[in-house]
Image (cartoon, rainbow, N blue to C red; front, top):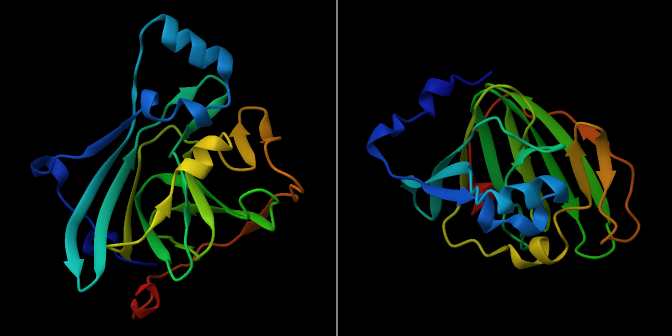
Length: 202
């Protein structure tokens, strides 16, 4: 298992980009909860992104912090995006635990799987897949990532399709009917160590 201290940062001197509810209402499952927030004029911060904390050539190192929050029946999550070809990414979990979901296919789903990770685990995002990170715990999820700095991510497709092909809720997995040919959920194991060489990200 990784020594996460090698990857962590003291973030108090850094200013994050914040993703608020109003930035991603399209992908929220529980419409009743969403409407209630609108009526109350609530716009909670869902997660915090600390970008480009360091660089290694063309690679960028970020940290994302996702506090625990229940959005009605759905656990808090990232907006999600599709990676293009030749655009891999790797995460290491610094604190807490979370659920990472992956999807290939923007209309008809070719592949879907989930990875459960905890502190010290690493999770690879393969090229040509979309991914979303879910914090379904009672603790803050803090994770770091290495990714190509100029990677081209597709966020609009995820918004237009109201998320990926599954929502993870207090009632379990629920299919998103915006997609066709949704397969069963398959779980895969995380990596237990960071690869020594990150050239596969370039």
